[in-house]
Length: 34
Picture: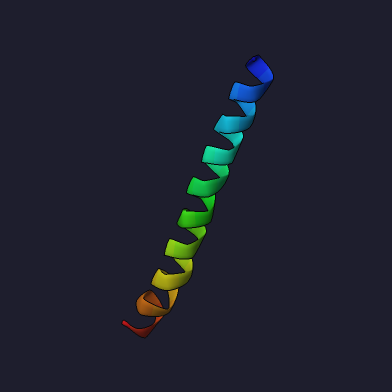
């Protein structure tokens, strides 16, 4: 059971990381143009 919970947490963290990377990729060009 612990292994499953750990895997779910890993997937959740990975999704957050992916969203964070997308956010940065969208923001960087905006910051550079200002």
